Image 1: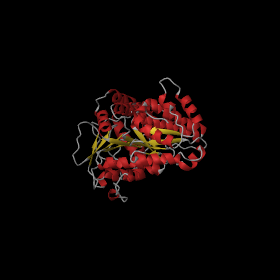
Image 2: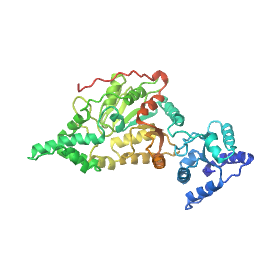
Image 3: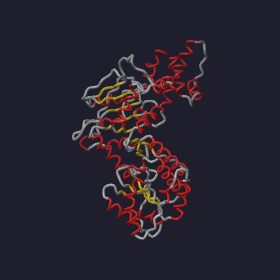
Image 4: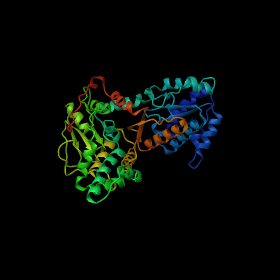
Length: 456
């Protein structure tokens, strides 16, 4: 058995029942000392055992020591292809996906029923039948594995304590160019300007070649663009954003549904977006949902408006670009945001991370400032409960199943260390469905009107 010593009272009840069933219980891993080789101890324990019971709780999930033990258990299972791990949930804490690639035992609501289920599972004739029959495996992103997380998010939304945090994937789904494509579009404009200002012969693929040369330094490229486009930078950026007249996506439809006032609850607390575009505002306006785009500390929202915080800057499709607009696109802008802990955007993010539950969609967790803020909020979390959720696409590639599993394990652990529970989906196209599952049926409206293009 693997467990936190803080759960000893509950674990003793489990041990007593299993010993009564005639099992020998090995609990040496719970008695390890700092500096001991965890992986070796886990291997030794599993070499003697038919199964390992992993007790999942708030105490175990906030203990770095137990987390290391969980990691060793999961890696041992992956490397040897064995399915002898039985997660047992004793409170409302989420079971990490790298342990829950099978059905787990839930004792959080009915301890005796859960204990009986564990007892019956361990009465299988052998460890092989335990894997194949008692605890059948299932896909990592199967609907039943996400149901408890969806339920928790739905209740948070009902109480008006849910913040939606949107990354680049949200706008790309609607036709806004991805980061690399946006850079190429802006580079073409910059190279054309340079060629006009100086008697230079510009090759046809100059922008693509320039992007390839500096591909790993996108923030530096952003600085080149900002320096050379000067006062026209924001306008050129806006033209590049809306060049293909993006307007509609199933994901933005689901965000509109999520933002709709709840018939039996409170509305969405707020939306935080790292995108410059106004697609969410346009869709909300088309559906008569009051909202306010906020991109500086001087802008306030009404009590009946959903605030949409553009923490990297805002470029509406039409109208004048505000002189207050600062786009976090280049190296110097990222540095300014990183070193100023009291910038309005950092304060907004910290406030929502500490006062609400945040749902992250379309975000890759590579932004160093975002990671820093998540880490600060996690350190300030006294319960170390994974209250925030990030939706991520499961890692799948042909003929690399082992590497995929290890990579997914490491990604989930990284997210957990930042205070995020991971909700895995098989494909990005499933994201709208996930958001719609959080909405009560009387608030779900599939036939959402779309805002007309202001560029048409």
